[in-house]
Image (cartoon, rainbow over all chains, first blue to last red):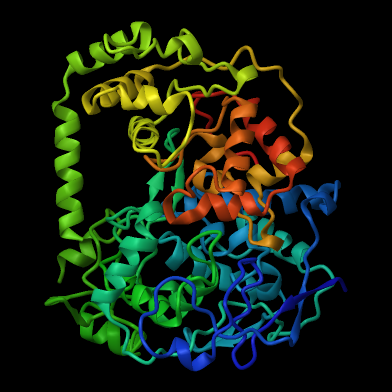
Amino acid sequence: MKIQASVGLTITIIAVAAVVIIVAAQPRSATAVAAKPAVVLPAASTKAVALFLPPTEQDMPKNEFGQIVKLGRDIFDNTGQYASAYVGPTNLRCSSCHLDAGRLAHSAPLWAAYVSYPAYRSKNKHVNTFPERMQGCFKYSMNGKAPPLGDPVLVALESYAYWLATGAPIDAKIAGRGYPPVPKPALPADYGRGGQVFEQHCALCHGADGAGRLDAGGRPTFPALWGAKSFNWGAGMGSIKNAAGFIKANMPLGLGGTLSDQQAWDVATFMDSHERPQDPRFKGALAATRAAYHDSPDDMYGQIVEGKIVGKGSPSKENAAQVGSQ
Amino acid sequence: MPQTRTNAFLVSLALAALSDSAIADGAVIALHGNDRGVPACVTCHGALGEGMPANGFPKLTGQNAEYLQAQLAAFADGRRGNAMMTPIAQTLSADERVAVARYFAGMSGATASAETSRDSTATGAHLATLGRWSEGLPACVQCHGALGAGVGTAFPALAGQSSLYIENQLRGWQLGRRPPGPLGLMKVIASKLSAADIQEVASYFSTLPAGDPVPSAKR
């Protein structure tokens, strides 16, 4: 097994392997005082966490299997183009949230997911296989529909994930999996402060309206964080806790780890307090849907934010009927 | 946030109000300079704004207008130092800067034909399209768009740009000669590039066709 050494952090694993920014070491307590500007990271320990290192692009097999692995990689990076039948009206792609084409530790890498399934998920209360887990990504994060099991799209993605996991141990607790949890900051996460963080650190790329941006050739470049083209209310990124983990470790792109814990929670709260496409599991009423799927303090669905109830769903063709029934 | 939106709206209204006459003024400046001593832009940037790659004079054609305008403003007030461009930008009025930026942004079709085409090496293509995430280095195209087409007003097009110009900018960020730009991103990015990386990634973008819509991002 190939491994690489990376700097880890003591209590929670907030290793930000992606960042090589020199940061003044600060005691953990300092991060919990208030919204600190700019670079504030907990003190890095010298304890090294061994991170799995997936094979490189050059290692991709050149045979029939390799062709499907490559197809999986292409789907992963250009999801709307290569898997259009299953992608909703979104400008997201798999690699929007799984950086470095699913390689990057602490950005929900594919190799870690692959070795973590089958697994029981409280989200749907049964043991999910890896392909079923990916179906969820299409249904919620891509606001589309689940490819049937055995569909060439799922086969290619599974092949890519399997290949990336070459040499990794079967281990649901493999280091680097998911997004590192960010400790709850001293002040309760705040929409208003989050808006300021967004304006200063996020709007440059995602736009002041959070709708993302296309490049000059019309191709989606920066993903929509809310609104009709974003992930829907059923996606994992709709959880503030989850979003704070991704943001702290990876955002802004290339500057991961530079926001304080407070800033990460505040801006995640801001992002996840905006309207987005309806949860496909909508039960006909916000309260019932919240009770069934969103009953968490880290979830704003069905809650009142800035005087308005969120969760009605951004209008889009796919969920207009549901929204209309509100 | 609403304030920002209002401002953005007002700015777009103001831009929309600039009629064809503004573009005509831009053409005059580009082709003839102005009566206060600004030379014709095309003298150094090429008759079609295609740049003069061998000298590192950048291609302007098809670049985002607001980006060009922001650079002229930065040259004028000294935030972006350049012995040639600073006096020129200072001698253009704000209106003239808008007009000339819009003129070049509106041109299309010109590519950097004079560029001595070097094969884009594996390293250049790799950095451009995949980055080097083991060092926290995103792929260039993640912000500059697929094949360096450019994104919005803050991430300029790189496709078909002078290789020497790109190299000079990256070195400028490394040495602190060019301001680090929005979020200080480019200083951080440049600090992770070796001299060889810079050459290869610059060469990669210089050989990409500019301005041609390409349906899919090649990884």
